[in-house]
Length: 164
Length: 344
Image (cartoon, rainbow over all chains, first blue to last red; front, side):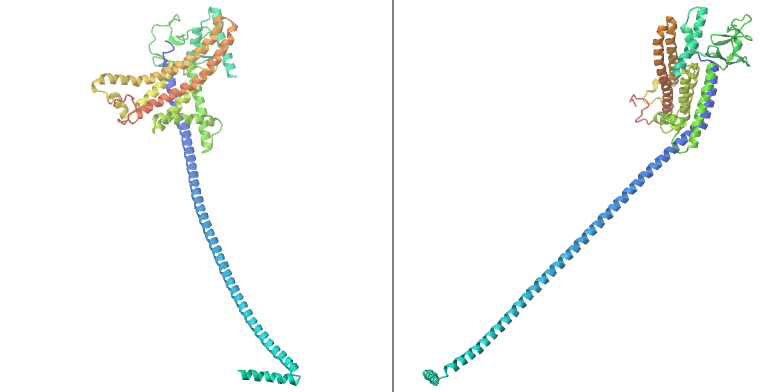
C-alpha cells in the first residue's frame, strides 16, 4: 500500500519541476532544435529538388544537343550524298564525252584513213598507169625497132579497123 | 565498469542491511527491497556515505526546515526531533513521550527527499544536455550533426516522425515540446534509477501520477468538437443508451492516463524488485555459491532493464501522442476510424 500511495511532497516537486523544465526546454532547446531540423530538412529538400531540376535541364539540353547532332549528321549525309551524286554525274558525263570524243576521233581517223587509202590507191593507179605507159613505150620501142615488126603492127591495126 | 559498480554498490548497501540483520535478527529481503525502492529522507550511497537531505514541513501553515540528520543520534538510531518523528519513511508529529501523536492533521511534508533530489539532478542533466545540443544546432546551422547532437538527433526525429506525426497528424507541432520532454524525462530517470545508488524516481507513483495527469490535461484541453461529441453523443448509438454511454466514455477519459501511470510505475518498480530479489537470494541461502547464479541473472535483468527503460519512455510518449491524436482528430462521419465498430 505504501508503494501505491503518492506523497504530496513528491507530487508538488514533480509538478513544479516538470512544468519549469517543460517551459525551459520548450523555449531554449526544443524550439531551436526543431527549427534547425526543419530548416535543414527544407534546405536539403530544396537542394535535392534543385539538383533534380538541373538534372532535368541537363537531360533537356542533352536531348537538344543530340537532336542538333542528329540533324547535323543528316545534313552531312545529305551533303555527302549530293556531292557523290554530283561527282558521279560529272564522271558519267566526262566518260560519255570521252566516249563520244573517242568515237568521233575514231570515225575521223577512219575517214582520213579511207581518204588516205583512196588517195594512195589513186596514186598507185596513176603510177601504175604511168609505169604501164612507160613500160609499153619501152616495149613498143624495143618491138618496133625492126621495120617488119612496125609493118605487121600497122597491119594489125588496119585489120582491126576494117573488121570493126 | 557500470555493471561492476552496480554490483559493488548493491553488495555494499545490502551488506548494511545484513549487518543490521545480523545484529537484530534475520535478514528480511522484503524490508530490504522496500527500503531500496521507496523514498527516503537520506541518500545512502554506500556504507558511511550518507547524504542527509533537508526536511521541509508545513505544520498548520508554518514552514519548518531542518536537516534529516536531526532524526539520527550518534549511533544511527532514529530519534524524534522538535516534536516530529520519522517512522517507516514518513514524518509524523510526535507526542511528549516520543510516540506518534494522534493528531496528524494539516501536516504537509514537502521535504527534499531522495527522489526529489534525484529529480533535481535529472532535470539539471536534461537541461544541460539539451541546451548544449541546442547550442550546437545554433553553431552549426544547416550542417551535419556532431558529437552528442548526432546521438540525440535520430531520437528526436523518430519522436517527431514516428510518434507525433504518425499519431497526431498535421497539428503535431504543438505537442512536440511536451512529447520530447516526457520522453527524455522518463528515459533519463529510468536510466538514473538503474545507476548504483540511484533513486527509483520513475517507479514512484507520485511521479507517474503527475506525468499521467499532464497527459490527461493536455488531452482534455485540446479536445475538439468531434472529440467531445463522441463522448457525449457517440455517433450511431441510440439516444436512450446515453445514460450508460456518457459515464462509460467519461471513465474512459480517466482510465487512459491511469493506465499510463500504473504501467510506468509497475514496470520500473518491478525491474528493481527483481534485481534486488536476485541479490537477496545470496543472503537467503547464506551461501556464496549462489552468487554466480544470482549475479548472472541480475546482469541479464540489468540489460533487460536498460531496454525497458527506453521501451517504457517510448510507450508513455507513444500513448500520450495517440490520446492527443484522438482529441484533435477531425472525424468525418462517413469513413470514421476513431471507433472501429463500423456501425456508423
